[in-house]
Image (cartoon, rainbow, N blue to C red; front, side):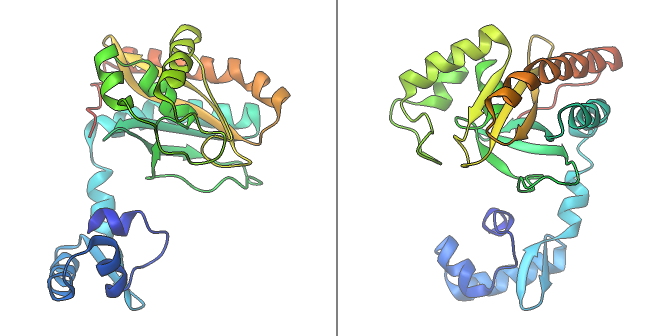
Length: 240
């Protein structure tokens, strides 16, 4: 129920909960009001949304707080240097969870903070998956075709494996309208303790010259966040 509510960009009426979860209406009605009582949901204008208490509790995760604090200066620097959106993601349930983002005033890219994005067709997701151990990567890719988000999405695991191998070699991941048409991304891993902790990325329009130009700033941001984490002896954020 919480996931169904969290993935909606508006409040959900009770009948919409029934459609999205398949649970009986009477069960949902009783449970929703219990969650409102506990602060896990808020009831606003006849619908339910994720409660502010959950937002506050999630923000207290010590590993993610330290990771966000270490990355924030470089997210702002990357945004200013490139004129695009900069974001920070961690791997959660096989998806790239956006835990921080910085937007320029004129950006038309949709807000993604708190959103779980498909790892196989976003730059931050590819940077996270490419840095995994082979067995971990294979567990995420599976054997069958992956779900397309646009007609440009790489859906064949074999082609995606080759793509991820290049990402691992170069230290940069690219997504060219694979997640959403009109949106491209470049990302680099943030490493620590011999494994990937997060990915820092740039999101902007599909302009080839721009994509080539932002590669070095993105790679630099990933390296600087890695160094900041090592210098601060910050713990690794565990995948949710």
